[in-house]
Image: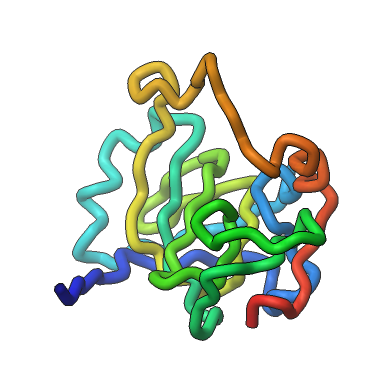
Length: 161
């Protein structure tokens, strides 16, 4: 089955190169960015200002190919790509939760953004943890358990080009 998606806009950040950028939004605290929404999608921004945080779903447009086993930034061992947040994925889809500052016309002002400048945006969804039970009581996070604290300081390198 072939799936076609259309970009709804473009994410703009200070990160012009993959190397040296944060690997997760927790490592991008205070980093500001903007999203420019295509004119035909502006009506879809109605009421978005009422939310403090949003999910961004985007295409990892500078990543080529994929690997089914990868060595993630926060570990020295390889893992199956679906047990990681590695960008070297079969469909190159990324997602981040960011702080929403404001919406003005076709521009969305955000914080805590960890993506490359020029990233094509696929979708936006409001972050609503109580509704979707994003807060899980009996959570297991696999190999991340002993590594997740590195996400605040770990920067990307060239391993996933």
